Image (cartoon, rainbow, N blue to C red):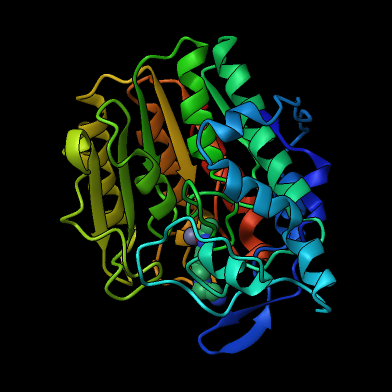
Length: 336
Ligand code: Q9C
Ligand code: ZN
C-alpha cells in the first residue's frame, strides 16, 4: 500500500498541553510519525494542491487566524506556544476581536491545542498528505495511507481542538467529489469521537459519517458523539454514532464494527475515508479501550471486505513505543 507523508509535518512540535488540570508534555509529537515510518518500507512526499481544497471545508477567517496566531502571540510579548484560556459559550458571531487571547478562544473549544511556530506549515502539509493519498485512489489504487499529523478529526469549519487544526479527512472527502467519486462515506475509528468531521457534514445527506468511539459521557470530547446525534436538517440519518464503554475489548468492538460496515455498505459509497486512530490500543497512555494488535488486523480485514476503495487517514495514537507495530499490523489487514 502506498504511504504518503511530508517531512514539513514535523515542524509542529508544541511543548506541553493542559491535561486534567495540569501541564504535561504534549502527546501529539513528531516522534509518532517517526515511529510509524520506521515500520513502513517507504513513503511518497505530498504534492501541493494549494489552499482551495482547504477553503472548501474551513472558513477563510479561521485559516487566516491559524497562519498568524503564533506571530501575534509573540508580538503580544508572550513566549512559547499560543494557547487560549477563554472560550465562548454564547453563540459565536463575527465580532472584531484584536486580542490574541480572544481569537484563540473564539477558534477553539479546549486548552489542549496549542499553536507553535511551525503549526500552520505542518497542518497545511498534513492536509496535502491526505489530498495526495486521495490522488492515488483516484488513479486506481484500492487503498492508500495518509500519515497525517497533526491529526484532523476534532477540527471543525472554524475551530481547532484535540490536537487538530485542519480536518484532513473532511478536506479529502470534500475534494473527492471533484475527483469523480460521487458517494463518500467516512468511518471514524479513533478512540475519541470525530466531532469536527461530524459538524462539517452534519447537514450533508450525501456524506455518511459513522463513528465508533469511547462514550462521551466519560471521555473527551464530552459534548459530541452521543448516540442520539444523527445529523441535522437534510442530513438527518446520515450520521451514526456508536459509543462504547471504557474497557471495551476486541470481541465487542469488532461486533460493533460489523454493524458500522453494514450501515456503510447499505449506502453503496464509492469511497470510504477512514479516520484511523491507534489510540484504541490497550497500551495507549491517554485512552481506555482494550484492543490488541490482532484486533487491529481483524478491523482492517472487516473494513476492506466490501471492496470499497479506502483512504486511510491517520488520527490519534500515543503509545509511541507500540505505535509503529500497531499501525503496520492494521495496514497489513488490508492486503492479507
Ligand atoms: N489535554 C486525537 O486523538 N485530551 N485527539 C485531553 C487536552 C484530548 C485526542 C485534553 C485528546 C485529544 C486526534
Ligand atoms: Zn483520539
